[in-house]
Amino acid sequence: MSTGRLTIDLDAVAANWRTLDAKTASDVQTAAVVKADAYGLGVAKVGRALAAAGARRFFVAVAEEGAALRQALGPGPEISIFSGHMSGDTDMVHDLGLVPMLNSVEQMTRHFEALPGHPFGIQLDTGMNRLGMEPGEWSALRELCVAQGPRLIMSHLACADEPDHAMNQQQLSTFLEMTAEIEAPRSLSATGGILLGSQYHFDLTRPGIGLYGGLPYEEARPVVELNLPVVQTRSLAVGETVGYANSWVAERPSRIATVSGGYADGLSRQASNKAVMFYEDTPCPIVGRISMDLICVDITHIRETPKSLEILGKHQNIDDLANISKTIGYEVLTQLGTRYARYYARGREE
Ligand SMILES: *Cc1c(COP(=O)(O)O)cnc(C)c1O
Image 1 (cartoon, rainbow, N blue to C red):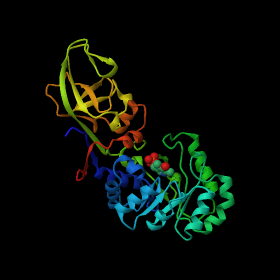
Image 2: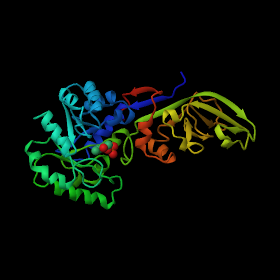
Image 3: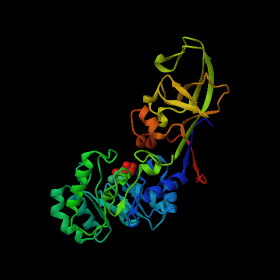
Image 4: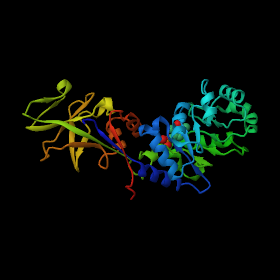
């Protein structure tokens, strides 16, 4: 088999959920965000591991993801949908007991008309201008809405990964104003907001990336390891080139390994001639352009012929690779391709 091997450590996901949960007071509930197939790691396996760790509330982006999660978890855990109640969602929301976060007067009308009495939450826009009701809209609907008993009133921080950013305090004040004298449970924070401190915690937190080992949760246990098999090795003379556009030239006699994996597997071309892969503890530079299915690596300094090289793991985490690739850990994870053989590891508890 010549596809990469992606190992997902479910115990690390569970441990990250527990340590994030421990950062808030005992009366603050910690949910789990598993949108985009649990950030690309597989919503069924990850969802069950989180439920076993104690998570009782889950968030997804769209109703279809909620349906997949319900199938994995069975009845019981509460599954909420950030994008709210869209036309066409009604049957899924009803039949699978999903909880839409209503984002507009249009969604509110749709929900109350189509599924009177069905649980819902509210998403408020406190300045990010992405999803949720704005202050003006909300003040007109607030009373009607609160009378229907929302399960949750939430908003989302735009700059929580920058603790000193003035936007955090500003959104907090707006959220407090918009929810003053409301008894419904409130939620403002994802991973970054949890780390901002207790005034951001309210009744429920919604961590995503921290569960999967990414920044801004620096203490997170790493979750993914990615090894790419060596397909072939060859020797190059001085002056020979590697890959498309001859972008790397051998300046010494070199040995090059070609590994299986490329930008079609979510490994960005931005990392060409920049990132390294690891043979055990030894870094080996990626040379030449990353192509669709293959990457060339300089292994001149390695005595053995490696069977595989590691691109994600203890030496290089998702944020290291993201920096080199001019992106963020979230994108590295969610781009991890479908060709990898995926292994779900358990029992590595430290
Ligand atoms: C994605 C998302 C989260 C989780 O954010 P992380 O930064 O991954 O912890 C929480 N809330 C909303 C509204 C989101 O869109």
